[in-house]
Image (cartoon, rainbow, N blue to C red; front, side, top):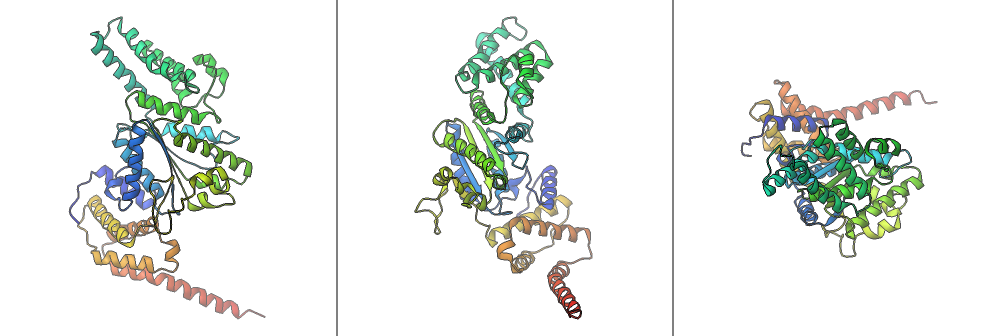
Length: 441
């Protein structure tokens, strides 16, 4: 493998995240293997979204198969292509709808993680609004010949702002959305920070009731559990109007909807998912992409998964020609197969190089060592069921750390001990069974 040059900031993020068994938010391009057809299919969706379309994809695979990695990889591609992204993991506290504000909690999480190319780590809401106003000011000065500080400039800027917001007033909730954007502009123009912050709180879904919103911003509605998705559609159109290519939502851990024990609540979440699916498929949303990650069971279980809701099952089920060894990457579901052994070997080669680069040493493990490590992983009892990229990566990072921090240890020694451990455990169990057998009456 040729020498690679990766900034220390990226190697730190990669090493720390992979050691902990979580997906890094940056530097993924340095460890990506496989998934080329899946990525290409989603990049095609992105082009459609940039042209004013919409798309929704369910990305399924068992635990540790790379769903979260693929979602994060796509997110990074999107930021590079000047999309705005927002991501959230579903949980018992964050759903699509709920009786205790779980839908609003998802909206708040998405807005907190709102990201752009220049603000990839989230918190980009105010930066987006400031960029919008700054761009409008520059265009107004260029077109009218006005200079900074000219008394006529605010009026020219305001007119252009209302051209954007006015076009949104015909959309669902668009009137109030436009009024809050105008309130932000007025706070910006007059230097009233409280007004700006009130507008930002409203846009982030943080107002507790309509009374407070009416008092501070003179709007009679707030973003809540029932309407938050409508505002996401407004955001996608707004982002496109101010120069971005669209808004992409990355929602992971869909299995938490499957885990909802109350069937009425679970069905309500599936109904919201159906609304999202219909909107993106029927042209009721523009410049919006929704990517949801979950396990095959979450989708295919006919008792409580998505397939238990007939309206979703009929839209998501494979066509009669897909399956049976044939792949269809244009459908609503992307099923992730496990990485091949060859792909995992390439991944281990990349990790070997990154670890050595980060800690400043020459790699000592050979490709033959990596193959032997792979054979041990594959040969473990139950490997067909348990072996996943996440499991292999965590074990391999543990091996690299141990070798680096214990110079006297050898690869053969550590691997031998690791292979001997299951056998020793089995022997201990046999000895315990024999011991207990002596007490049987």
